[in-house]
Structure formats: C-alpha cells, structure tokens
Length: 309
Image 1 (tube, one colour):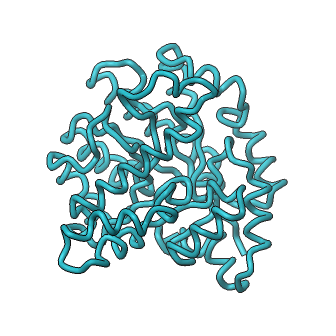
Image 2 (cartoon, rainbow, N blue to C red):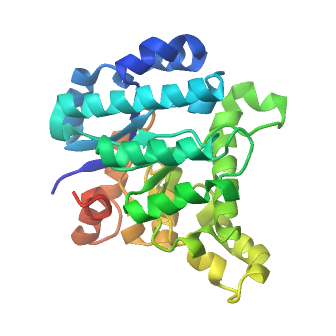
C-alpha cells in the first residue's frame, strides 16, 4: 500500500533567492526547518517514515503577504510555480506538484491556474482563506472557480492571517495557533452561504487542518444558514462535500471527529510537513478503529482517486 502525503510545503530555490528578503517569515522558517529546502534530507526522512510521495505546495507566508505590488505578487506566483515544477521534475515520483495563485487579480488567478494545469502539468492550485481581507467567494472570482471545476483539478485551501483584528493576537503566535483556523472556518462558511458549491457541484476543494472548526460547529452553522436554502439540511450537505487532510491528526479526538463528519472517502492523509508531526499522524491513523480498506483509502486511495494518479 503506497503512502501519499496529500498536503506538504517547501520553498523552491529560485523563489527563496528572490523573495526571502521580502519576508522575515521566509527567512525564519527556512532557518528553523531545513526540510523546506534540503530535498535530499527530506527524501531520507520520507523513507524513514514510509512515505512514498508528497503533494508539494508553496510554504507560507501567503503570496499576498510578501509586501509587493499586485503585479510583483503575480510574478512571485509564476516563479514559485515554475520552481515547484522543477523540484518535481528533479526528484520524480517522490514529489507531486501543486501550484499557488494569488486571487487579488481575478484575471491573473484564472490565467495562472490555467498555465499551472495545462502547461506546467501541476495537479491543482493552492489558494488561501482571504484575499487581503476580502472573501474568496467574491463574484469577480467566478471565472476562476468555473475553470477549476471544468479542469477537474482540486483547489487546496490553506489558512492565512486574519485582517484588521486584535493586535495582541501576535503574542504567543495566537494569530497562527488559532487565528488561522478561525479564518479558514470563516472562508468555508462563505463558500457555503454564497452558494458556490451549489453552483459548482463538481468543484473539488481540499481543506487544510481537517476542515478546521467545521466538524465542531456544523450544527450551529447549519442552523444559521438554513433559512437561505430550500432544504434546512442543505448547508450541512454542502459542508460534507469538502475534502480535508489529516494535518491536525496529531490530536486523536480531532482526527476521529473529522472522519466522522466528512466521511472516510473525504479525508486524506496529509501532514503539513515540515510543520506537522508525520510520525504521530501516521501512528494515530494506524490506531483508528477502521478497516484495512478504509485505512488504505486514507493513506493513498482517496488522493489517488481525486488526482487520477
């Protein structure tokens, strides 16, 4: 049974050289976590953990947080995507590449997504949970979501920083610790309430962090949104259309809750490597009270089906 990590991150060398000076976060992360750029060591670690392949995408910070102009941000997106393709080409089957696009310019989001999928052969694109404070369900992004639905390729949805909120959230990294999950949850509520999933029933969205707070708050969210839908259970059904990874599977109660809510076929093994504890996540999945067939679907079957691997 192959093991495929469905959500991990790195910095391509060309991207790092050009944009590390724009972000202290890039410098700090690359210094603290060697696996973000030392790919030979990373593969040795994968071998040690029994991981055959990783879905690789650009590590945070969000492209929109590089403090660049919109046009410069778009240039950074292209350089990152070319770099991700190069890493995958260099190491063959070990790395499966996913692009990253900024949504600030909807026309660019569409064209770069098309380039990623049709020219670079990337398996989908990563976006983040807000567009410098604007919601990701904005009507002007409709062509982007329509294209992603037609392409059959997934969107990997990653949390990012909340905007215009408490300054003290930066203390103890609370803005990342829980702020990211709040923002991710808010974006998912918007995706449901806007009818985006109803308009695009074949759209595939892989949500980081086990769907964040959705499994815990689904009943409350459904009760508030149900008046906007013909069926009172429609918001709940739409939330269950999402796919999630096991990046918070280090905590067994969260792992069980996510699987119970989304269903075994909508959960895929993902570690958020090099941040997540791959060993603990793997151990927890192996200790779940599920069948061997279900475990195989978590470790590789679901992502293989989604990507047609």
